[in-house]
Image (cartoon, rainbow, N blue to C red; front, side):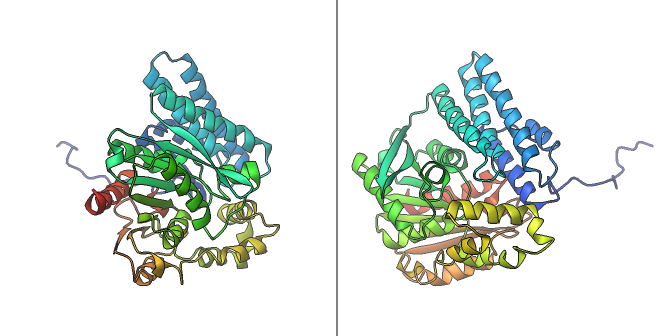
Length: 390
């Protein structure tokens, strides 16, 4: 009798790439870029197979190695499209390589410069039109990248900002490219505390995000007055930053909290008891969050960093938002409790419309910012944009 109809009772596939949630999440974050042509699955899996969770040096070595491999591939490749894709992958791997390193580690500067160069060269290889801008802000400047598309002036300008630990260029693969493919021009920007400002100008996070956003909008709308509608998307901590800006700037017609971040201080406060705990303080996720927080907030101690996050709440602010609001969330988000969706919804008493999408674990979009499920969250976001703004 044939065995073809027998069912297997063997081991099932794995759910986590690492047992440690933080390393799992960051590995999945890299793989998310595969759909945008900025990562390749097998080489990422091979890279992480050499990395023990919690070993920042091994992580840097693994991803900087495959970044260099792709740089070499690009240099040896005569086909423009393949060369550009190799450079996009090199960008992603350089960006990823430095993630767990201390803020003052010299390798960060190497990776930082390399990821920008790879990104720009990749855009050139693909003949993608873009413009880099610098906007005067306080005693320095904020950087942005504008991606125009043909006919985009007749549709809303989609403005995208990251959060606690991303880079300006990464925003292109997270949402910018998908928006361009759907006929929307996009502006990616960064503010105090984010990648460029904190590295190059020691400019640290502010809860008054309407100030840097206002400066950016002043500049881009002066340069491109053809846009009469703006949709602002905030990613991760940007789920606080973007709604905060929208509460104080009526030029923002719609805002997407990707994902919800109603109260960042409440999220971070859970780390306080772990600071000096003999076990919890050494967990990779705890150690990284506290160290990165001190760096991007410009604080000398974990306690001071946590204290500085308390003003980062939409309580008492969200009721000022008058435009359309889309709230996204993951049901198994390891960082932000899904209960913050309800908190945010209830506070939006003056918004023109409010919609929320909570992605289940079964959908594949249950993680923070739907990492690993870009097509899923993008379908929800662009459907909302299409229905509300055309």
